Length: 390
Image (cartoon, rainbow, N blue to C red):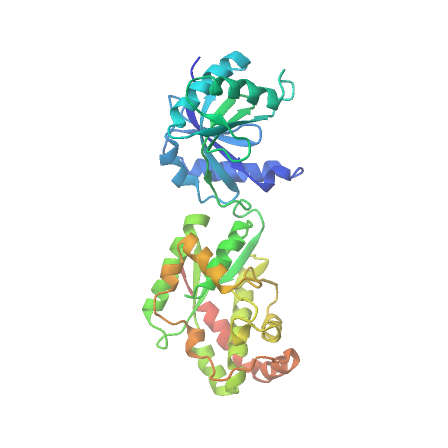
């Protein structure tokens, strides 16, 4: 009896969801099938796993994994051998053959068995003992180490039997688009792309919005944001970017506001416009890259004063993260080097020398109210004149 090479794919917390588990599974199946649509491979469910296999032969897992690794909701990719064998004698022989191919240079091992079929005549520990005994007596020279082995042979008894020794980690989370929609306030900095990634990883379908202020910022700043969108789209698929001309709003606020309050009012204007876009996109939240205390506009007082401008929930995935943690994620997802390019966004150029760090929300709302009749048409025009990049 032979075994064929397949790819066994694990998913995380959605396995714990009962009433809507099938919804999440179908989301993941659709995403995997889309990414592998030109390969001729089949993607099916296999008792708490997904199975990628070639109907006509073996799967080269290391070619396939990069095409599906960035799908949110998938946790591990295991290049495996699959067999229809169920009798322990057949499983022992196939397991030993598989192990021989992968144990070169190793000195210690253990066998771990997962038994989904509870009617199987042997318990998981008994299966592991049977296979482990064969390996120990095979002349390969390996000894058993159940605590810190150099190699572990995994055996999974499901509808079929699977063997694997290696796995590649995925991003986990929830399937993209399974948790509603949000508008991401995207700058060219390090933080907001990471916030977008983290929100998308929790299943939020994202539309990005960028506030562009020529001639105060160059087209290279916009190009940087477009490149960030392209990088994020490797996780989300197509990602829409709304580019809002913000110069008129900024100049009006600069000429109508005390410098120390300018940053707060600029950010409130952004949330007003982003909220209008959220309504247009049927989104339930705004997503920002704010981290508590990182800069003057991100003190608790400032965040409160800015948040009241939003007409929907404001999600801040980075709010309690240190800067180095954010940088580490940015490097992991490929946005750091893009964000590090030396082109400022509109906020950077309009920051006051001594911005207020403990603004009163009521005072800020009163100031904005006094100029809102002139500000609102500018914000409305800005969104109306926005252009989209996909």
